[in-house]
Image (cartoon, rainbow, N blue to C red; front, side, top):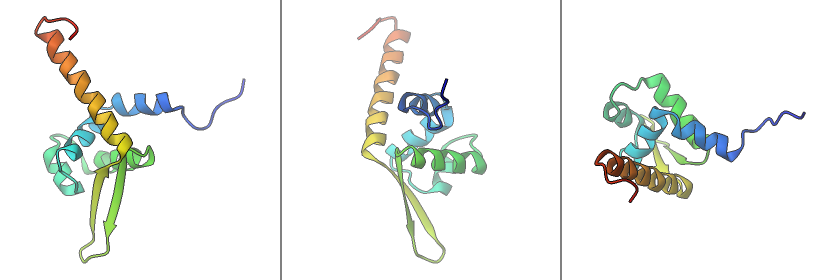
Length: 108
C-alpha cells in the first residue's frame, strides 16, 4: 500500500472545517477584518500562535491570500481567495441549516 504524502482535497477541507479557529478566521476576514492584530482582537480566545498557524495553513490551502506591504512598520493583510469565498458561502449554508434544525423546521 502506497502512502500519499499530500492530503487529499477532502482531507484538507475536513481539516479546515473541523477547526473552530479556521472557521472563525475565515468568517472574520469575510466580514472585513484583514490584519492579524485586528483578527486576534476580534476572535475571542485565540492566541497569537494559533492565529499565525491558522493564517499560514489557510494561505497554504489557497483559501486566503497574504499581502505584505513594504512599510515601516510592516503591514500584512489577508483576503479571501475565490475558493475561500466559496467555502464561506458553504459555511453560511451550514449555519442556516443548523438554525432551521434548531427551530424545529427540519430541512429547508
